[in-house]
Amino acid sequence: MMGKHNQVPEGIIDGLGLLYKRTIPVMVIITVIFFAPLSFTYFFDETHTSNLSDKALAILVSPDFAYGVGSGTLSDLNGGQIKRYLRHLPAMFSHTIAGSIAIVIGLAQFNSTIQFKYGSLHRFLGRLYILCALVISWSSALFLADTIPKDEVFSGHTFAYVLSSLSVGLLVTIALALRAIWKRDISSHREFMVMNYAFMLSAPVLRVQWIILGRLWGETKYIINLYSAIFSGPFLVATSILYLRQRYARPSNSFLVSSQFRQIVAACGLLGFVFQIIKGPSLNGGPYPKAFILALGAPLAFYMALFTVLARAASRRRDMGSYTAWVTYQNGLISAPMWSVLVFYVARDVMRCSEENLGMITVAGGVVQGLFISFVVHVLATSKDNGHLLSKNL
Image 1 (cartoon, rainbow, N blue to C red):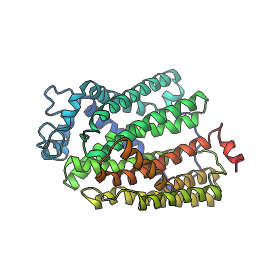
Image 2: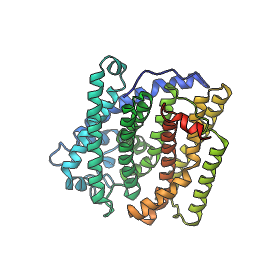
Image 3: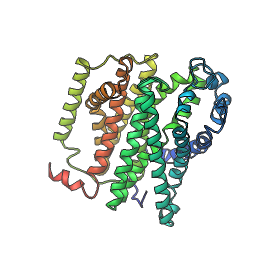
Image 4: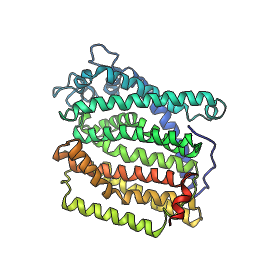
């Protein structure tokens, strides 16, 4: 999946950048080691009353969080999510097995020895990883097609939209990664596979948030899962971006940083914002509006500020490759209101999501969509085959 790389020139806050480089891989390794056995054995308990994951949550958070109201287990007085899984047991069983295998294989694919000394093993593991991703997307689609119309997805329609987006994101990034490697564009292949692996880690990241918020907040798993999912979308995309830009340089592209293009993006964002005010759904923030602001608003402000600081730092040191990247990601966040229009119609007319959830889905989905699209645009526009075309059109 990955090839040799050039070190990105050291910019601002060298110490923080070095800390980030060392911290993220360690956190991913710990998360995978913790989560893979929980996922792999999820349906091994024939009574489906207490699996290894539930037992871990009972110890790390509380028995009430693991088995009580809003837990999704069979002992949940409001009805267990597990009952819906059991309606599609073959698909869900394959989903958890494939997911466990994929996050372990994906982690191994980052090993430079496997990449460069054992190319045939790297390619074999890559094919197995793709097979797992296809199984995950298929099983998710089967489950969601049955549960979304009945409003039976855990944490409601908002989480259903997040799951649907993740499944689509897995397929899109795999298709783009295969296209890149077919053209022998190793650097672009690496970019898309890193993003794909981040999507693959969405379930482990959610569990980490369950544990932290379960202890700090004290709410049910149902509620914590909702706001954790809202936070996780932009977080996974932004973390992938920061991981890649800390390690790998990409070329500049004059079109992406041109004033004309930025004006177009700003105009599209403004039009989307006006649409949301006039025709968009009301935004209630769910049962805890302040939690929605903390889950989406605060990280959004942080990402925008961070991209702005990094873009200015790159401009000062005349690193146009990095400057192109950070400005493009800025544009992604600025264009979020435009993408929220698409999210609104998909959620309302295709997925038939409830009116009370449309506001959260529209806003959160627009942010993730804008950031993800900016990532894809940046990779494609700075690839060895396409980069010069956009620049010539300036």
